[in-house]
Length: 466
Image (cartoon, rainbow, N blue to C red; front, side):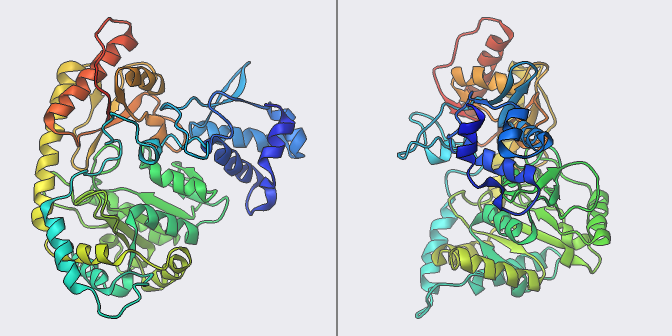
């Protein structure tokens, strides 16, 4: 594609707020994710595009470099800049737009594929049906159902939940969201401006990285000048399932308080600790300054991915501002699901115990299969959550993922979990399948690895997404 054509597609890209390179990055990202710039397509050279846009070459270089860190473009000396190949076969919607590869399996489920890429339970527990039955009796006789902060019954239940964990909380400090993903989106919309810096761990949850990038923020892992926001997953981290020590929790919280920086504590998997003991949330370490710590969580991992109920625990003034923002978006969440969540949350312990026991068993099964059939792959035992973080002995996880796909198994390469596009030799595997299916998945991965190594091995007939 030459510079003139791309300039037409970019449109009024520079009319927003923030540094020009971030505005250019955001527009190019949208064109790539929407499929307007197809996988493998060539982008104009730095100098040519800079001249067409009437900006400095450094603006284009910075935008291309950021897109390369995100895995959206590939830059090589002598061959220029190209849109990165799709990690999954391109899937077009009815309007002809190619879906974001991170969301393809949700937006356009392929045939004969087990859709468990997202690490969330696909079968709800029997307690959920009973909770919905009870929720029907709790529906108010006269109520529009528009409550942007969420149903009071659920906010009371969430407040009681945190109070029971040693963090005194009132319903005014809770806003209900449509899952934790909406919680991140609301917080980004309120707390971030274009060009703001967000500090995260690496690796970390790619859904959060996408939200921050959508807000035109700069995501970094490096200690630097005071960021606008810090995001952490201290308990049952995604992707590695690690648990942060109490000493590190105190240090991180003290940093946020001392620098007056909002700190998001992502507790989505916090109740999935294999030891059965959930550590205190970060706000419990704030020494009377808990207004700096924002806690997000949901029931999607403990109960069911389809129960789209999450929440934010924060200082009451911030919750009030978030509620006003949510009122603009959708006026509030679905009422019956919130009431069912309130019922479940008050008797969550049996559900949680059963889920943790199942996950611990499946984790150990996957670990044993990997050690037996892929002994050169290395990983640490997860302390909780639903995923492990695997390091390949050599090679590139993006390239291997293409080989694995041809052997019937789709895996997320490590670059998606790194804000700087690193961890190219890592991949994430979840252990949500029943043991027999986990065995089939590892067999397919072993066949793919043998082919990637150049060693003959029969291909699997099954297609799994791990």
